Image (cartoon, rainbow, N blue to C red; front, side, top):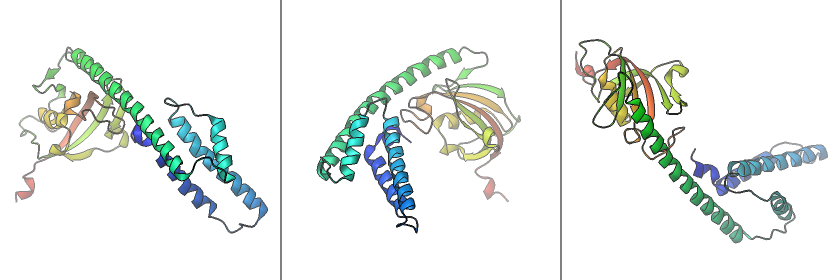
Length: 249
């Protein structure tokens, strides 16, 4: 989930309202004093947890006044809120806009930092023994070439691979090894770095790819991959299914 989605106070409050109403509507002992007491406390805890989630998620950008949060809750429960619906919406939308502006600046800075660090990493990696580069900027090191004489892998082929993906800080963001099974892809459905890199080996081969952002996910954050990330993939090519094999008899 992106930072912007996490920080959306409107979305969080809507979600909490739905959860709270669902919880309050359950049960058959609605006139039992103990049940009502316990349910009331549980509802307060639920609301508190949702507020705590907002506060924790946004703490690097804004420090909320806890006393005012409690005041707003109490006055609303007493039917004495100082804000009507229009004022509430206006304040929360302004808050979302302010947070979005701060996050955009932070993401832009992070993207620049990632690009700079990635360029430096690739510069040093290129000096290592056995490392080669392509015109596009892809860096690679063949650890095992695979079966000699096999036809070159084409973009329309389906490849079966084991792989591990890491960021330049060593953080692993994906691994078929950890999932315990290889995976199949049609090569031309993958990022450009893979489309170019996989054909550098044959079936049974192993290769390490260092992929610059423009051959990976570019300026966009994807899952656990930050924007402008240089990616490191260790890939084992287990099998190749030629695109025209189905047409042969």
